[in-house]
Image (cartoon, rainbow, N blue to C red; front, side, top):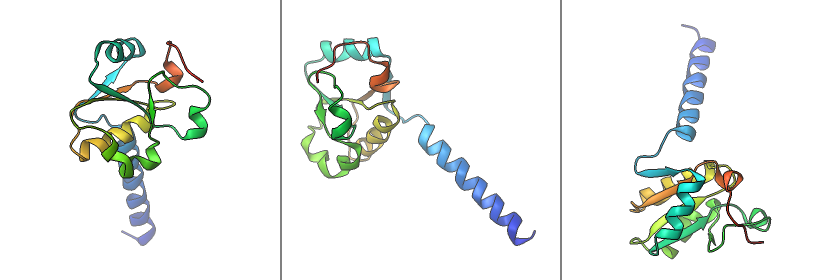
Amino acid sequence: MDYPSILKIVALAFLAWFIYSRFASIKGLNNLSPDQFQDEIKGNSNHILIDVREPGEVKQGYIPGAVNIPLSQMKHRVGEIQKNDRVYLYCRSGMRSKQAAKILKKNGFNELSHLQGGIMSWKGKLTK
């Protein structure tokens, strides 16, 4: 096999791994529809609701009661979250909240849920 062929195979393998790592489900993460998400945060008093979007995005509107911990700061702010709380995450489309769940899972959090489709799928009230 020549060098360009090997390089193409390595590049395709990396691309496949990257796509898989971004879209694969996370073990232990509950994917909730907007209705399920709303029911869960209303019915569970021992929880924290985290908006993982950046502050500029949050200004456009957020779910009442949410704490803003941007994904870019999650590793450094994990200590602000109680391990015994059930954690509900959301972002704009659902991708960053899954990444935040991976970080929290690595730090020992087990009760994790996220809003499928992110705030774009949210039908409830927003605060500005």
